[in-house]
Length: 165
Image (tube, rainbow, N blue to C red):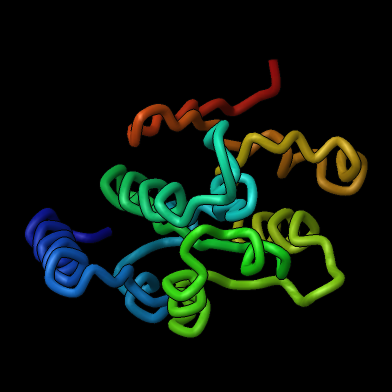
């Protein structure tokens, strides 16, 4: 288990990196001093399209990553290949893909399958508003690990639940 001093030091380094460079941490940096139970797979397309007006927003992804880190989670962002064509800030999004911050599913495949498979393999939670009804029989436990969310005026509210209602 990580000591409070080590956790504070890691948080300070992470905050400093985001503040100084405005670049989210890479996978290598995110894997330092974290355990599998703190991982949250983020359904990037679902999050990017979460606001009601306009095209997919990169700001939504950045907001979710920041909030999950503040809450002590390690966000792992998974997107379908189409998101790169739908996102509002294509150049910044491509940088995140190139840096390994956003993991893009291969073109022509279903990102939901990768999200659910990784959640099973890593014993991770999933941040999405998708109910994965078409995959219910293949991934029954993973569907119960979702964190629902809502974004309003640049603020995010997370709903942690362990079971379906």
